[in-house]
Length: 107
Length: 119
Image 1 (cartoon, each protein chain N blue to C red):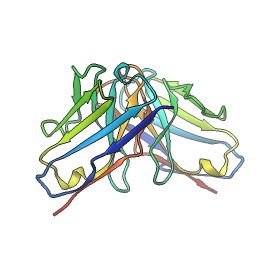
Image 2 (spheres, rainbow over the protein chains, first blue to last red):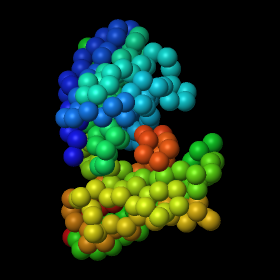
Image 3 (cartoon, rainbow over the protein chains, first blue to last red):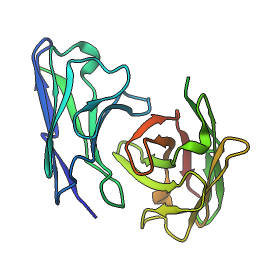
Image 4 (tube, chains in turn cyan, yellow):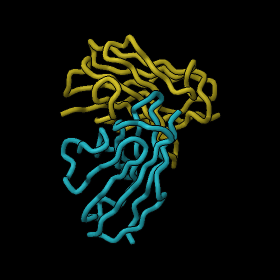
């Protein structure tokens, strides 16, 4: 099983600033990496897939990068609704595995 | 508009069974692999199972293998998860999700069906 490790567990950033979230895989997953945003009481929402492709309707201030074992999600000009939890997911090898999540909080 | 609507969740005793359903609309259901993902209270996301377009291939997490069965009815656009021999650690919100391609990311999710296993 591929272990996905997200860092930091909690990221404190001021509104309007940039936030960078990281995800590391225990072995290469190529570009088979997605990022999800989850608001309290809601289902996850796909932000990025194939490491860097924005999903339909996702603002351009969300961007993904990386390949192999190191990935990042960058959120520019943070808005109040962005301060929630984010998960990465690898789907390169069964079983699909998620990171433990990063909580983005207001500094 | 893509919509996924789960039903069938509830309270069940340890060792019991439950069947979840997910009604799909707004897309060609038979053209997509489908999955179940769960989230225990206050915890992260865990992939549970995936079924291929036709239903001919199925995949399970080790934690549910041999106890859960996934199936689909492409004539009625419904995804199922049959859960047997339920344990307390199966308590979670269960989401159905559509996959991009055969083994891609989950692009659309249902609102979730809560399952509580408790005596």
